[in-house]
Amino acid sequence: MDHTFALLIAATLNAGTVLAIAGLGLLINERAGIVNLGAEGMMLVAAIAGFATAVHTGNDWLAFAAGAGAGALMAAAFGVLVIWLNTNQYASGLALSMFGAGFSAFVGIGYVQAKIGERTQHAVPLLADIPFVGPALFRQHPMVYIAIVLTLVLAWFLYRSRAGLVLRAVGESPESAHALGYPVRRIRMAAVVVGGALCGVAGAYLSVIYTPLWVQGMVAGKGWIALALTTFATWRPARVLLGAYLFGGVTMLQFHLQSQGVDVPSQFLTMLPYLATIVVLVLISSNATWIRVNMPASLGKPFFPGS
Image (cartoon, rainbow, N blue to C red; front, side, top):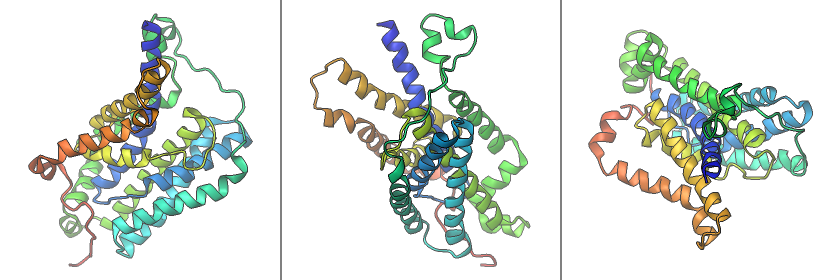
């Protein structure tokens, strides 16, 4: 029983890492006042880019770099549209998501049956041998721990650094930031590209480590859950991480229940993560004041210099 529970915790951390990295990327976007609904598409394109790189090179880190590059490139295209051309952020994000789904399906045709080489088993020396705790926490891919460190770094950046203060100011009041001489559009563009790169890393992790394989549409709504995480976390990095593990745990719970022979329709178990997302969003949105206090004031609104 203890072994099974340890494996469930390990699987939760693994599943939550995808959502955490993507959620942190989207958090950076939204802290700058930009809503990017294209996370699903960016993650799909990054997933095939990372998987193809892993197949041809056998190197996980090159695969993550390829995924980050693909995500950043798509985010840059989105940024040009919404920041410099002032197109509607929501419509542009949806278009990006649909483009990513179609483009990844087309590019990935030749990789459906492809396989990545033998995977390296990761373990933290000494700690991995501790009963229960070792299998649960210390036999993960390094990216799991990087996601935790990234959360701490981003929290420090946003609330303890001058650059983070400027980023939040741009998201709260771009007109005031512009009046003080800050390049609002360039700051927003940088935030969008960095956020896209993190979504790309999440997509590559999904296809290279979490699965590992390429299947059309394999992101399967995780981009939307990551987007919902930013609201769930009230735009705070540590809460994004905790929320990612919560949703990751719900995802893994369905497989655990199925393996235990629980007499529940598989379709119901499959929809559990998305049902949990809806329930959480409804509960949070019921307190409009809480959302208004925590949400960046200019979120989703275009910026017109000189207006």
